[in-house]
Image 1: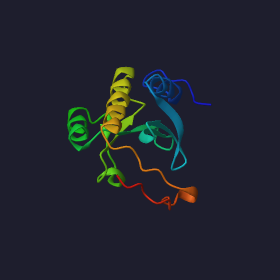
Image 2 (image 1 turned 90 degrees about the vertical axis):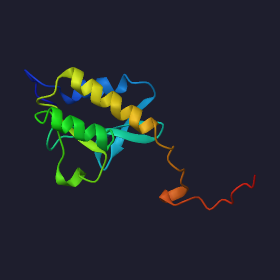
Image 3 (image 1 turned 30 degrees about the vertical axis):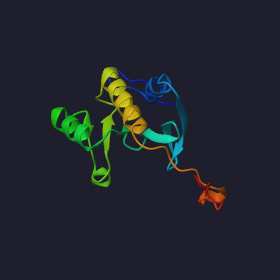
Length: 130
């Protein structure tokens, strides 16, 4: 159970915000609560540091980190990924909604993930000729 907050956004609120987006499903990615659209990961929750992990693109990430570093930041781990971390302790509901929406749109702009066969291996079925 998550403790109540006087400011910021709780995981329960984050979850409601994400699942209200069209075509969003919930699952786990690297063992963490995560959200997907069209089979693509777009956001997750890191309980260890109480943040939303949102995949939004490098330009948008750099802009947000410069504009409001008390809410948006990255760690060395995410430096080479188009991802921003959103502090749920300091973010407003509107900032979380905007980050979730931007991450969803960014994910939809990417090609659909390739289907894999059993055990995560690429399918061995022959390709159809056109």
